[in-house]
Amino acid sequence: MANWDSNVGYAWWLMESFWAEIARNFNDKYRIVLAYPSVSQIPKVIEMSNIDVKKFNFGKEGVKGWFQTLRFIRKEKIQVIYFSDKPAFSLNYFFYRVIGVKKIIVHDHTPGERKAPEGFKKAVKCLRARLPWVNVDAVIGATDFVKYRNIKVGCVRKEKCYSAPNGIPMDFGEGDIRADLKEMFGIRKNRRIIISVGRANFYKGIDFALYVINRLVNTKGMRNIHYIHVGDGPDMDKFKKLSRQLELDEHVTFAGRQTDVSNMLKQCDIAIHPSKGEVGYSLSIIECMKIGLPVVVPDNPSVCSATLDHVTGMIYKDGDLSSASNGVLTLLRDDVLRNKISRCSKKIAAEKYSIEACHEKFNTIITEILDS
Image (tube, rainbow, N blue to C red; front, side, top):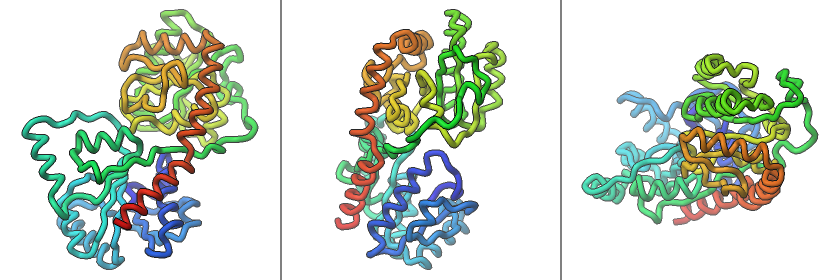
């Protein structure tokens, strides 16, 4: 069940790859149905898979939407439901099972830290997690961080929790640089480039990155740096306004949504990922590691789980401008450290975060769940 339009983009390409893996590995036993709430353009990976695409909003609210969902399940003879980012507990699951659903799986890609329950609240959540028919059969975490968050915070039974750590294609973005980044955006040739990639919203910490650049440019006098943010989003105009207020327009570029991000990253000196929450790490961090671009990240465990301080990147104290600025400054000034981090990042990315390893683990988990 998809949560967004068929052409939403961003990290949903990864979910699309999981749907394609399900079709490739289980098409001999099941008819694979993919329900989109709206359909604009079908992704190529889905078109090439043996998947029956339907336009149906599985998240409809109200009594009417609830009955429509039950009719859809009954009509399509659904036996297994594979959700993305849905709760582990829902009274709806009882009715899904009554009309024929045998397994319910949730793949959790939701970001951020959560506070673990205590006392009475924890007892209630633990009891609820053991009720039959209203809980999922399995929760797959996008990383180990998400898996253990479901156990500790969601009180999901340990035997129901799995982890298939997110990965990217290791051949992604290979080849020659196709466009000169500085020429493309009118950046002076002598400038060192700091880049961030992600949705342009406050949760991704783009405002914090601007304050870091302001500290380096206007307080420490580093006039030879330039910051680029790649990605669009709802808070873009607010970030542009903040950049003007800080008098940084000569040192900041908002590149918007780009299709050739990997080649842009190759032309940068370092990256910064000041997000307030991820699933342990971001795919953009892995993309940087893959090409050997050092990344500066906060010590938030939902963000820095793939980063080893001074080995694959620099870790600063979350929310601390001085700490973050020093991390950026150290990388820009220490060529030996930057080169060491570049080599280590490439090696670790290839060993731990390839899409092939991710798919292999995912397929093993799905097989185990269906066979149990």
